[in-house]
Length: 300
Image 1 (cartoon, rainbow, N blue to C red):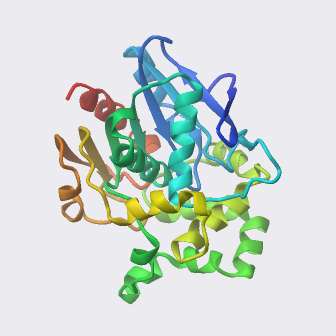
Image 2: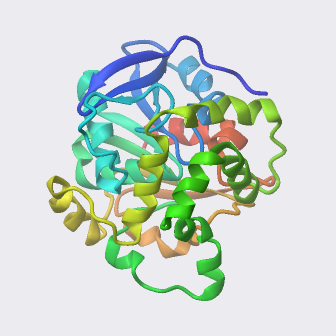
């Protein structure tokens, strides 16, 4: 089992009280590392000390609905749409006094990092995104895919049903482990490694946020205050900040070929294929490669 973090910190940031870990010198160049579903901050447990030793100030937050992150008001909608998760990142940076940061992420976290880089490039010094350009739209989500492609999104359709919500609530650990196995078929993680991350799914808002995230993609209502951001994202804006995209050679999760999104990065850009049976949770499966990408893109 890989390294665990020490004592977690907590900060009020926008709609949330965000739980996060921090490492490295306080005056170092800021790096925010963003996790996906169904994962947590421990995806970066081995990336973080490498970057801290290199002099970076590393911030790894729990996303809304995970770990110790909590909504500050019971009345706040447990919204999981793509724009609000990116707004959470900006709010966290504001709360921590971080003007600009290198952003790194995968899965949901990669999408949030992409959105910040696209819509708030003044806040993003550089970007490392696993599986590339992940910005979506409800219009794109409404377009039918060939059957084989639809099949790999089975859980999205399951979550669209009341049975799926109840099933995920009841079996969230079993569900998470299945996704880990499907998304990273060659990753031989042990039970302790999974259990450490699965504890983050016990958050009281976890199910609501996850279900809304996937239902929103299929057309469920978001919140009107984010409509303008979603309209801008629906135009699939280019990302101009320096970027390295990464892909594992054994990623079992739905993902596009790098050639499909290379044109969306209009600044200095590089794509790296990480070999050795590396799956979807690339930062945890290939931490040295991920950390090196952060260091390299910060020098562009």
